Length: 247
Length: 253
Ligand SMILES: Nc1ncnc2c1ncn2[C@@H]1O[C@H](COP(=O)(O)OP(=O)(O)O)[C@@H](O)[C@H]1O
Ligand SMILES: [Mg+2]
Image (cartoon, rainbow over all chains, first blue to last red; front, side):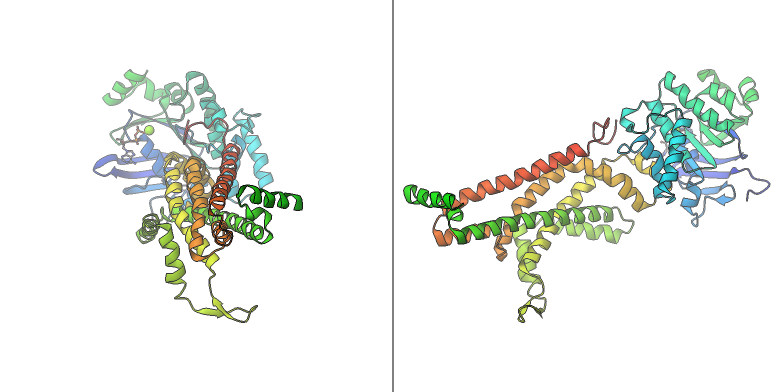
């Protein structure tokens, strides 16, 4: 159960240090079910770390992270219960190179959720179609372009039927042509009501697709606002500085 | 067949080259038995040494320091001592400490573990210790990000090992594994030292009886060349069969 005063995904005063290096210094944010938010900020500002905290890939030092009422920052966390509800897609795709596109999508539901193979396969084929890769079922990751691999990676996450999707600069390694296909795929997902947290440098995407934009620097959220407001009237000088560089 | 045997006997009488293991029924039976026993030893120890390697490599990634150090100690002992000393240690050191048991067939007291079994155990652990290190380095070449991806999909530690890390690590380390297995096949002849009648042992019995050391040595050399060639052929086939399309270099694109 989501508590009334907290979002579907909700962070409260989250801190994280790597050794002596403070990477996240008290971040709070709330994302409602079905919302898409974008997180932007200079590299090294802790965006990837923040995203990875949410599915417990990175354990936090302090603060509370809720996902639909599941407390993430507790030793009693049921990791499987959390991870079947949260999908994550990385910059480098990280597909399993020894499995075909279809097998990559089928593996987790079969291995982790012990679901019926035939049923999973039907769903995997439908997912490949959804990310517009019908016909590539038998291709190995090494035989696909970066953009195609990234869409398989998205389908692989979706096969677990998550409630939340995390995207960490998923188009950063792609050329402009294939970037568009991947962004369109995420946009379709957002339209279908998936809750999405998107770390990105694509300002056009943030402006058009997101409900809110967060700007991070030095492990803090400097400012957040709906995209229209955020891009036309940034309040903080650091945000203005950043936007003047990327726009 | 008899024609061939007669020819080799005549060949011996004419030239003095004594291939008794071809024309002599008793010698032939001995060498064939030895040859098969060498193959049996090789196949069993290859399989068991891979099992030792796979399990050991997994345990080396264990959370418990005690488990990791035990694996390290095991590796040190078996890598840093001569395999002949290991075989003697097992057969004479451990073997004589075990009680003798009643053999239900012959009705006499017999050792609990036969010399063949000691040879299998000893050689498997010897090659297995190397396999642990080989698998381990193959695992280190698997990108950390691959593990993170599986972890994020809810895989448990052992599922990650079996479904992601091991299949990739195995491909990465196949050349090194091949070298070690070839070495193992060559080392099976140490079972000779504890009277396992494998090929080398059989050859020695024959040359003692028939005084044809030179001929038997040449035979042994070619027989091992032949066995290793089969293994290398099998390994190359495996490497081709496991090749992943579009996955050229080790561990990434
Ligand atoms: N596992 C780690 N160990 C040590 N330092 C890390 C680790 N992960 C990230 N960092 C450091 O944390 C800082 C923020 O990294 P990151 O979250 O990747 O930022 P961003 O994604 O915004 O570029 C960087 O200085 C990085 O070097
Ligand atoms: Mg990053």
